[in-house]
Length: 418
Ligand SMILES: Cc1cc2nc3c(=O)[nH]c(=O)nc-3n(C[C@H](O)[C@H](O)[C@H](O)COP(=O)(O)OP(=O)(O)OC[C@H]3O[C@@H](n4cnc5c(N)ncnc54)[C@H](O)[C@@H]3O)c2cc1C
Image (tube, rainbow, N blue to C red):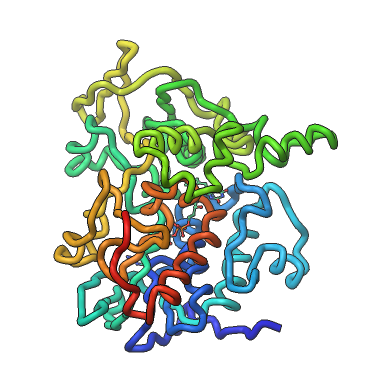
């Protein structure tokens, strides 16, 4: 049986010198750490923070059972192994609490060192890095793997971007996982993806008068969900059409699982395909919660925003106006290196960017020796596989290749091609 590591979630002991520090304890960070179990590797951050705090606790996952596995070396740590060991029945759609239980099980078994604290500062030190945590701990690490997901990078359309710095009535939806009483308050959500619709449902639960503004008709994914009941022939056809769930229409959805093929496509095509493969929409369970409780206004964009007494007045592309007490933006994500302000400015300035994204090689290495990026920051090169749990195994295996085969820890070699 696999040795059971002591859980270090609350009483973490961090070695002073690490081979590898992984920043972020989501599915990607935990999997990377598990693949580096023979090195001194520590993963930093609250385990599964995004999932625990930013998603509705009774959320149902969209990804199919097989596509929702974290990964350890030797094909270990998959959700099937968890289910068999813990005598858990396969459930689809997967309830979020079950996924969180699985992630905790995975961390306890396969991640040797973990520190709950966030990383607040990283600077170069010799051939590696010096890192400081929110708990005041200082460690040195030969290699840093940045695995911070999408949440540091919410995108604000220009109309709102400047204003929201100083206006508390405008915020990112991703910053709200629960609301205090919103009775009598008008809440406008801009965007119509899963996150927008979940926020709308939560705001309605809190008594708000909620409207969602969508540029195009809201897409509901019912027909594409893996869990929709189908006869045997339809099931087979579905599996041929959708080898993985969550990525756009066939046949281009196959590209999502071939990141190396994706990476050689011209930049513009890559971005267009990514947009198409990750097209926004809502799962059936959220549809049941918003329809009839939230106004869905489709085919409009906000074109202006002004003060109107205590409220904000939004001008819309159809010539109408809306007054709102709170405007929440769920308008996607855009990578911006400056959002990682815990990387020392001198270090950030050495990370070469390609149209705003870190220039990475096929093993996730940036142009700063021994500084790697996995998950969303790698989407610019490797496409949508970077956005779903499905990409954790691919990424972790490649990172191991970079660190173990690329040289000794702390010496992963110089950056090859972009
Ligand atoms: C509403 C919604 C539903 C989704 N449903 C699915 C689904 O069904 N299936 C699926 O595969 N994907 C789904 N996703 C996508 C999901 O977010 C990603 O699959 C997954 O979280 C990517 O893992 P990650 O480790 O890259 O990022 P995350 O899970 O976001 O983990 C990154 C972690 O880094 C931490 N962090 C950031 N900065 C620091 C720091 N300085 N120090 C320490 N820690 C730090 C964060 O707190 C976070 O815990 C969904 C996303 C949303 C928004």
